[in-house]
Length: 173
Image (cartoon, rainbow, N blue to C red):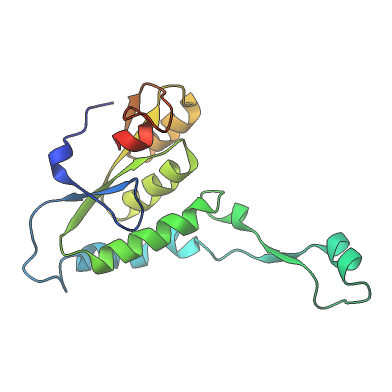
């Protein structure tokens, strides 16, 4: 656990609690993140995100559309993403947008999370060789903190506070 050197971060307009580490302006906005994008695109973890099956909800389909054997109600199995949650899909989308649209070279991410999103970020950052700091409340489960740390993330715990407080973990991030 460590403190945050806030002078190294820029608030993301795409996701208010997401901060991106910055080093220096690139030579060209077109090539600033090419090596990271290459790692991102070749990441087995990232490739697996969203490649989950659709499952027909038979009882609900029959109740709403009796006699319809092909249509009905379907659900996307986000729980079968590599991180076990739909947060993987959110992180994948934000990361790709950030890498493609940043005028600076992205070298890491800081996220205020109470768990699942932090684990998804830790997985993506690990595969892309990016630094990751996760700000969590001090009452966060030990297993989630250990999981983020085992994936190479640096966890910063802050005192539990209400969302309106400057001390809330998302606002600290």
